[in-house]
Image (cartoon, rainbow, N blue to C red):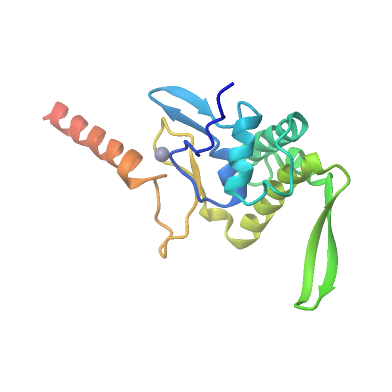
Length: 182
Ligand SMILES: [Zn+2]
């Protein structure tokens, strides 16, 4: 058996956990690719978020993480109110324990079943984004792109997952449309 490929193959990384979970699926040359098509990919994703030591990349964790991905996609695409129930069902698998530590007040997530941990953390992160700036949760404006991002630009005008790929593709097709009309 060859060693699994541990590098993250995705075109967009570094978004907040909830949106980064959505970005485990992307389109290349009209084919949808999925990092979470197995536990090897789940291990890559957990490591990318520093969760590899806390949670096991096993079949149960994969199943629950995919549940969370479906729930979050429904919520993001459904707009306000849409998909809330499914996200809430994921959140029911964990709770926050308030703590006081030497460094001050804190919160610690607790799970009866740790295989729900990454799913719960992603759903919880979505709540945080909703509290911070719900209008900054965006899908890439390119119609063939499925990636999502949290717009942290000063003016809130980010439209593309990446200017280098989707931004340029859109510019090129606008140019094509202009030259065709002329
Ligand atoms: Zn894009």
